Image (cartoon, rainbow, N blue to C red; front, side, top):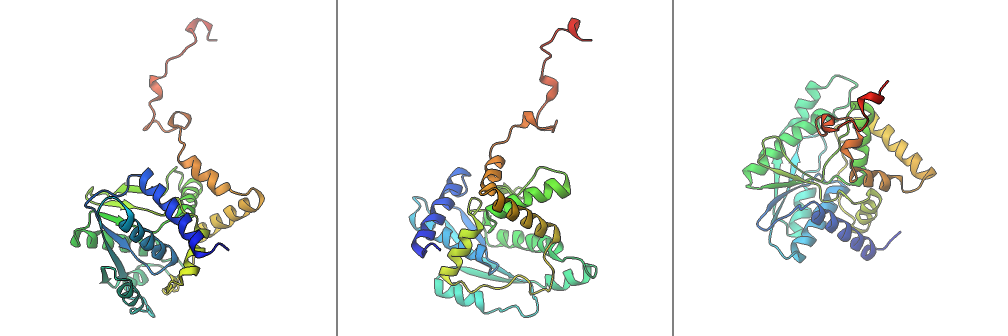
Length: 264
């Protein structure tokens, strides 16, 4: 396993590439960093704090956690950690847990509804905190897995973009870890000894489709190493004319090069 210095340098480099390639941060930005208490969001916070110190531009960071009132949620963990770190933060309390439990049929996963409610609450909080950008901790593996989930189960070529505007057009969503490997984040998290808060406090089972996709990718990586990197490169190397979507490529503009006389 790489030591802390090695893995930190690697994550700094890859995060910096994402910030630059996708023009994520500009001078004067006020960024709401969504902190769940998992390894990904802790890592994202530390990466952004690093670039806040070394970047040639000035931008603000505020860490925000949504306390969804899940039974057993350790409310003291994040305030204690963020206070010691000296980071400006806000804890938002909203009982989305009750709504999710009431609306989700027995035996069904709660993740989808929980995610929608959480996202709406966080978007509202960003506006209230005068933030023009909101940062989420999704990494490279999440992006590839989501692409395959949409491809196999939703019938569309779509994934989590590193940067996008919300539907209202008044907030930019960032994924600074978009190019980072989950395994590197895991190593970093272990070295940093983050106070991890489990994401299964609601008792929900992992989304079975995502679990299958994870297993499929893991199998591919065993048989053909570095397939995830190849898939990630493919998402950055798109040829609209070689797909079938008429909304992004006007096939009617293509002219026949063969004379009608020769057509049988």
